[in-house]
Length: 114
Image (cartoon, rainbow, N blue to C red; front, side):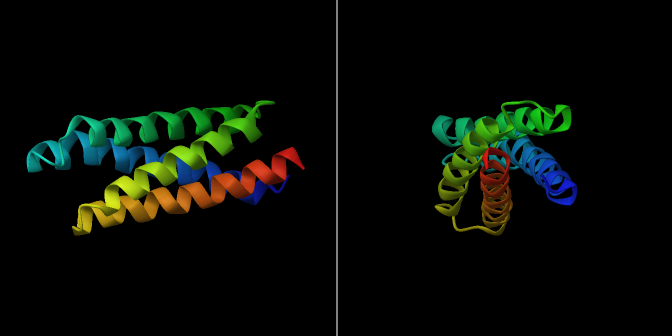
């Protein structure tokens, strides 16, 4: 496993976690509906939680990193798709960060399981 890629995945997960949590807790609540709709808030918070979990698994060198990276990629992609529906700069930024995290997590999942 490439140490630089491993560290990049941890950093991407931490950045995605921070942005999703901040977006849900400040931006979406300030915007109100539809940004603060329950399903969308759950998507952002699920993404933040999974990114935090995955970063922790990676930092510990867990035997389950391939699985958590794969799940993290799926959840990040779902969140990105959800964010893109809003067509505003903040949500587009969140979608971009989620997609970047999903891409590196998927790469990590395949390199760990190989």
